[in-house]
Amino acid sequence: MIVMKFGGTSVGSAERMEEVVQLVLATLEKSGPAVVVLSAMSGVTNLLIAGAEQALVRKLDDAYTVVEAIRSKHAVAIDKLFDGDEGTSNALKADIDAQLEDLIVLYRGVGYLGELSKRSLDAISGMGELLSSRIVAALARKRGLAACWLDARELLVTDDNFGKAAPLWEKLVLPTRLQMNRRLQEGECVFTQGFIGSTTSGIATTLGRGGSDYSAAIFGVALDAEEIQIWTDVDGMMSADPRVVPEAKLLPEVSFQEASELAYFGAKVLHPMTIRPAVEKQIPVRILNTMNPSCGGTLIKAEVQSDDLIRAVAAKKRITAVYLSSANMLMSHGYLAKVFEIFDRYKIAVDLISTSEVSIALTIDTDERLDELQEELAKHAEVQIFKDVAIVSVVGRQFRVQSGIAGRVFRALSEINIMMISGGASDINLSFVVGGTDADKAVKQLHAEFFAAAPV
Image (cartoon, rainbow, N blue to C red; front, side, top):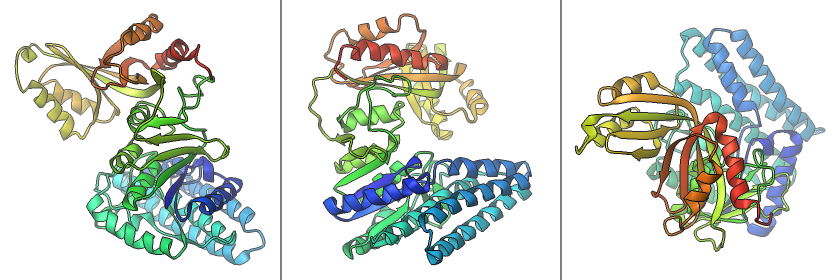
């Protein structure tokens, strides 16, 4: 059994939805039963959020215009896919109308209260997946596939950290197996949604932007899948972002550890959290291109044989750097614990960290509540905060025993100001911080340094 996840561009139009169903049919012939995890149609999640923002400032007419745009986008797809099948077309449109009536109620509530909480935003932003998945499941049935539709919110139980909820494994594994395995054993293909879940009390949550990948991994682990497939709009993991480095090359195989570093530090082809549950269960993850299905993509597995010293260069933008300095750090114990307790209290994860005797430099992937954070940190140190910086990471292998890598890296970046360096914690990653406007330049220069002479 495999799990297949399709992103927003893969279901972004009637034509794309048709391609998805054909890919599912072709896969079932080769691999047996499957769970298909679907994102919202491309652009819909952004529309849902835009409508909520209009409702927040009491521009309800503008919010209702967003609702009609969403209705029209799905109606166009339905009309193309079910031309001549009036019964199915009308039933789908009725389902979508009912869902959008709920959306209107939510928008009204936001407008009346003048408040858009993370809880409300989760209920709103997760609706797109419910709409797209109904259409694709109905299309699969029309193409002769035994297909059922399941609401992921009834299976994927999470905590109440709205906006970035975490799965509660002890609550979700059994219901997922009971609901999905029965249908899979009966020969049905299960269609469900990524990105969304619910708390133990049934309140809608989301796993954060890009969380559909994570949903696929969660379902794959819960069901002991043989493979998790992430179908997207690129051929796989590359040696750099091809939008920045057009000559970037495809990586046919990547280890779990390499993929984790690349995903977290900027390789947008894969949600960073996807790898974690797959690693624990040793389930291979394959990245494939919906628009180029003949390409073998990238297989992520436990161990990979490669002679490449450097595997890829990635950049993570819109990062915040925090610099702390205090003489109280000198030869004292417990100081770092006090500092990081503040980050824990604000539920802020730290990406990179570098220390000296009296200073700490670190990065965080948020710019929320910075004034409050700075005020708390200022009780312990002098604080400087720089917004809109970038982490650039060079990912390879055996950095601790290889000489000359750091020299080549910093020689290639001799004309770029490096604000912070983090190395040694990982045997496969050397990371540093640069200004946001220097990120693409740094990636290009590093890729030229390490891959220019390599065959593409």
